[in-house]
Image (cartoon, rainbow, N blue to C red; front, top):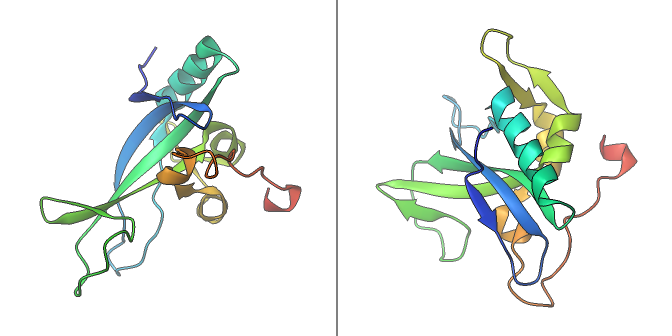
Length: 148
């Protein structure tokens, strides 16, 4: 069974079992295309760890998107972390939402992806999954039937 990348224990939120995937943020035309493929092994391992840890844990897939820095400086706090000439932004989606909207990327690859439209509606900045104060404490928003 594949080990998760992180176990996170936010002081004011649900505990998280996290699998992190690095992706390029923009396609060749400079548009954000929300690449989000993972392997079937990633999903199976994450699901088993969530089950092993029990009801106090929620499994999430976190995507670290790398992009070149913008042509002009953005104000601090806009959500990116700079490292080695690239800006990184961290987004996350719950395993249950991800699995509910899978598409195969080919059986030989053993890879799957969430439909991009569904992914854009459900993905949130990782910081929203990590409430740091009691007032910021809120569970990830439930998926409404119309979003499915």
